[in-house]
Image (cartoon, rainbow, N blue to C red):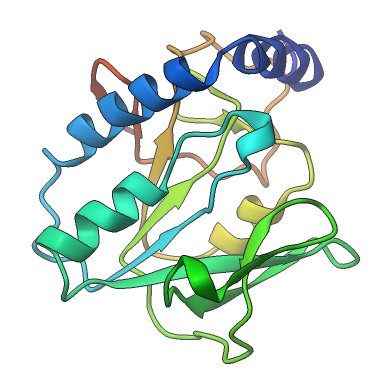
Length: 188
């Protein structure tokens, strides 16, 4: 299948989940995440969930990191839909977030983080057996990750879609993807 078909199919599957299922699946994703070795990670970038799109609840991950890895700096994005680029900001708590006009929680902090990032938790609608992903189609994360030496980790409620037929040379592969049942590592 191509990205457009996958995007439609997987968005529909996620939309059909109720809040209890999203919560339970998010908890299972966190269980898998907690098994990762984060000892070398100093800075972690994580997307904030769009509840209306039934995205994984990454606030669970943030809370867990704050409790068990308080030394890790947490960075969250702010999207500019005119340029399809993101800026990155220190996470300072839910009280420091506002919903954008696109219904995305974003930091109010204007100070941009421009340092190294050891691990990026990447949003996706689907992923394939090679580590390619399908997002919402704007390319924010592909542009952000291009040329960046960081561990790229996807979060998916569902298993791989097999092979995405229309990957592009600018598509950035994940290093691993966490599902509720396993962590899948992608090799070159």
